Structure formats: structure tokens, C-alpha cells
Length: 385
Image (cartoon, rainbow, N blue to C red; front, side, top):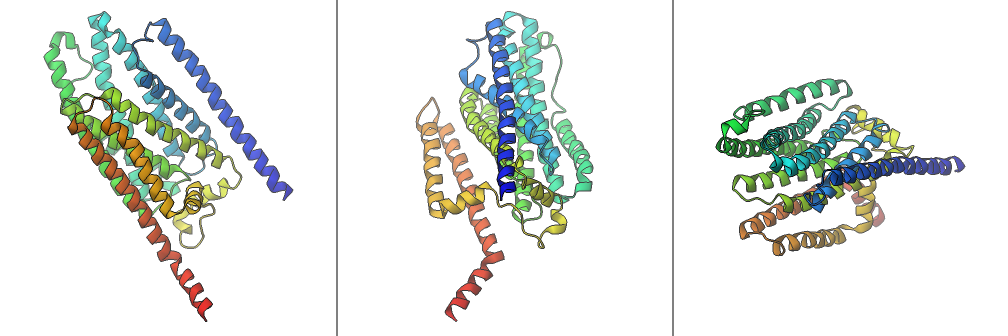
């Protein structure tokens, strides 16, 4: 008993130490970021919501990096998420700086135009690389196949990007070509990126289908993080659709991104807390050997979400979900300078997300009953006898 209590105290201390390192790193970044903005006289050129999101990307990068040393299963996936958010932070910061300074000279505008195009392509590439890696992992979730999964993901995602963006002009002098060529390239870029994200979402639908069938599992809380990744893709598709139809709402979209970023931050903190516990090693090895152990050995850790759902109850969960839906949708639908078309699309997207969530709950409950329901029925029969 004393040993167990000591382990709990040690794990809490490790968690707080790691979280402290993240907070120190975040404070140092905020100091650097703020000094940079004031030294370049950009404090009035950046929106507060942009400042928040760039800071959130750094925090997610730091907290996910801290989980890496404790991660045994699905380590390549964690590394890919670290790369994604670190790139989002750096690229957004660079674009903000060049976007604010581009009016000072034609050369700076030309650099900013090329960076803008390159950023769209790079962001789409990293995003679909994560998804294609998951796709190949879902097909064959074995330890020895990890290197092959990465190579296949690089090949497929690279092929998709090269074929889709083959008509894009990049790293050219738009000053000589003229603004008409730049506008045409930008419109083509947005449409091509829209198609890449649709392909990305198609892969994700297959990934979730095979996951619901129980063909593979992931390290604890990574499925929830992938859910947020899916939400990011859906939001990007929506924003790209608006952009291709000449509806610019970049700053408004940043508020939705903030909600997603907060979800990422909470999930990575919960995951860090879980990984620093001694019992997490058993579950991580269970994930590694799931292909051999499924059907023979029960999962050693049920997780935070299962315990929360049991305590909350199904009816309360549905009510809470409906209230959360109203809290999110009412400001988006009735506040701000949105057209009826945009409000209609936001409502459709939110209804789709609620529908997917309800389906997941019902499917999980039915699947759970199919596996263990006979035990309940047997107990009832025994009580009657």
C-alpha cells in the first residue's frame, strides 16, 4: 500500500515538473514574441486572436514534446503532431510579420506572396502526411511495419501534393508577371488546397470506420486528439470553400481555431498526466501488442473518458452536448457580420458534428453490449432462479 502511494506521489511530481517546464518555455516564448512585435512596430498590425493562436500552437508543441519521452506506442504519430503545430506557429508568425511589412516595398510584397503560396502547400502536406500515416497504420498496426508506414505515407502524401499543385507557380517574381497572374495563382491555389483537404477527410472517414470496428487501437487519448485533428480538417474545408467563393472570413475563423486549440491543449495535458503514471507502461505495451492480445486480454486501462461518461450518465451527456451545441452555435449564428449563406453552412457543419458524436456514442454502447451483454442477461436469469 505504501509503495502504491509512493508511486502516486512520484507520478504527480513528475507530471508537475514536466508541466512546469512547459510553462517556463511558454513564458520565454511570450517574452520573445512580445519584444519582437514591439521592436518591429507590429503590435497594432496583429489581431489579438492571432496572437492567442500563435501562442497556443507553441504551447501544444511544447506539451506534446514533453509527452514524447514517456510515449511507448504510436511515437511517430506524436512526432508528426509536434512537427505540425511547431510549423503552424512559425509559419503564422512569419506571415504576420511579412504581411505587416509588405506595404513598405514591392520586394517585401513579392516575398510575402511566395511565402503565402508555399505556406498553403506545406500546411496541406503536413496535414495529409499525418492522415496517410494513420491510414497505413490502420491497415496493418504492427510494430515492425512502422518504418514502412512512414515511407508509404511520405510517398502517397507527396504524390497527392505534387499532382494536385502541379499547376501552381511558386517562387517566381510576381512583380514582373503582374498582379493578374498572382490573383490567378492564388485562386488556383485555394481550389487545389480545397481538393487536398477533401482527400484528407476521405482518408479520415476510412480511418474512423476501421477504428470503430476494433481493427486497431491507439495510445490513450490519441483517438481524442485525432478527433480534434479531424475537426481542424473539416474547418479548413469550410474556410477554403468560402475563400473559393470570394467569402473572406479569416479573422472570424480564428475564433473557431481557438476553440479547437483549447481542446488540443486540454487533451495533451490529460495525456501527459496519464503517461507519467506507472500503470501507463502496461497499457502502452498492450497497444504495441494489440494484434496478438485482442480477444484474449482485457485492456488494462479504461481511461478518463469512460469513467467520466459512466459518472455523467447517458441522458445527462446528451443534455450537456445539446447545451454545448447551443452555446457554440448561437454566437456564430446571430452575432457578427455573417451572411445568411455563411450562417447556414455553419449550422450544417455543427449539426454534422453533433450527428457524428451521437452516432459514435450509440455505436460504442451497442458494441459494448454485444460483447458483455450476455453476462448481464445471465445474471438476471440467475437472480430469477
